Image (cartoon, rainbow, N blue to C red; front, side, top):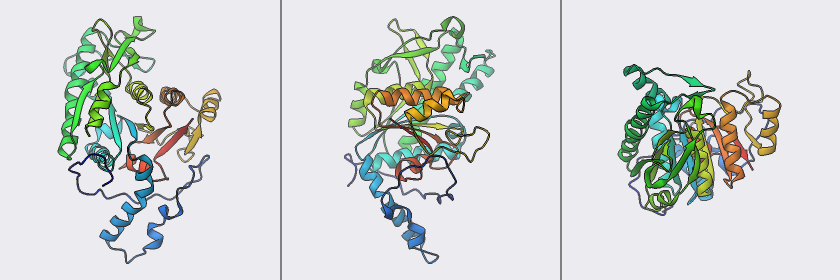
Length: 330
C-alpha cells in the first residue's frame, strides 16, 4: 500500500492524452526516461486496460517523490464554476490522498458571492481588484464561503470516498486576521497576521482532507474577507508544504502576455521578479506571483500557477513532468 492511511479509494481516473509540446522559454527538467513513453511502447493494439495500467506505472516515480508530502491547493476560477471541471478537481484530490499525499484545499467563491449579493440587492463594488466589504457584504461573504461553498465541496469529497472536514480561518484559531492597510476604502478586507496550523496537522494526520474558506477573525472576533491565494500561500508556508498550487483561468505565466503559446514552464524567484520589474507580468497575475514568491521565501519547495480550465490539471502538475502551467522554484 502506498498511503499511510487506508482510504476507500474511488475507481481509477482516465488520464487525458498529453498535448503536443510547444516551444517554450523555460522547461522543466526531465523525469526518468521511462516516464513519458507509454504510447511509443504500446502502439495501436494497446487495450484500454493495458493503457490504464501503463499510466499508473508511469506515475510511480512521482508518487514515490510526493508520498507523505503536504500540498496546498487553492481552488477557484473556472474550475469552480464548471461542474465537470469541479468533479475532476475533487477526484484528483481524492486520488492524490489515496496514493499517500497530504492535500489541503483552500477555496474562494467570488461568483457565488456576487450571485447572492445581487439576489439581496446589495451593491457589488471593487477597488484595485479587491472586493469592497462593508458589514452587510461581510455577512454574505461569511455565509456563502464558510457555509454554502465550503460544505458543498466537503460533501463532494466525502461522496468520492475520502473524508473531508470543512473549516474557515476562525476555526481553531487557524488564521488570525488584521485589517488591510487601506481598510478605510475596502472595509472588512483583511490580511493574514498569524497562522496556527495545529488543527490542520491533526486533521491531515487522521487521513482527512481539510477544506478551508478564506474568512478569518481578528483578536476581537471581527471577521474579515481575505484573498484565497494569500490564505493558501500563508498556510503552505506555516506547514512547510512541499508544493503550493494555484488553480487559475489562464495557462500560467506568459513570456508575452499577448501570446498564449509563450508559456513559461519553469522559472526561479530571481527570474520571476525580473519579469515583474520588466512589466511582463501584470494585472491579476501580480498578486498570485507575489503570493508564490512569499511562500517560497518561507520554505515551500515549489509553487505552481496552473490552468484550472484543463481537465485533471492537478494530476498533470503533480504526477507528470509535463505539468499544467508554470512552476516557480526557490
